[in-house]
Image 1: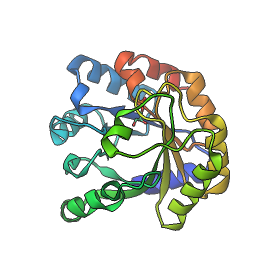
Image 2: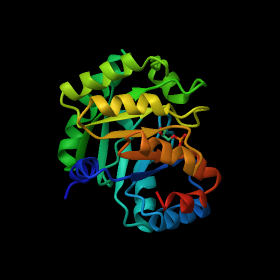
Image 3: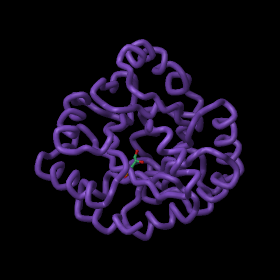
Image 4: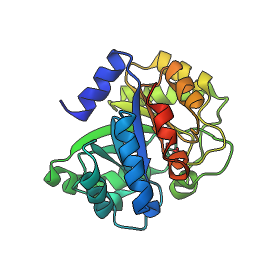
Length: 240
Ligand code: 1GP
């Protein structure tokens, strides 16, 4: 079964899927080993590798992760340069909350041939930045404004447009290290209005916040920053 099929099945069955995000620039060998061991114990469904600013070698990071875990690795690219053929799949992000053509289609054109030649699974995702209370790297790097977190009508219309364009999932992103995760109400109203899986990430630091995102209807929740600081947190995320 492809990863997209797993995501869709998770959506249909109301499963609570978990993604662990690894930033290739912040890999510390000891923390990585512990994080991946805990990810297995917490039954994480995927390991995402990437970020909005990656300076190092993404493919080397993916290979390092794959040496240590059987959990599928999905690329989370900040731009076309972050393609790594050794990953199992890529979230091909179209930044539909923004109006920067480079992140809607430009980078995709640059990497399209390499993606096709590699045979990697491509999962087209509508990526939506939601204001998380602080300016985040992804806002700066993409030169786009997030949707204000109280403007649920704009979020719903954007997510619907993404679904109507044929994107296979919606990613509600408060930004890595956000002060506030995507609000429960916004997740809930988006989930009520689309019929594709919703992925939620950014600023999730506790089991309570994780549960809140699932209760609001998220099919998959992404956690990164908090695990860099404390990989043991993953053990609390196992009983979700
Ligand atoms: C960021 O959604 C992811 O792109 C995860 O965010 O690092 O804040 O968990 P955190």
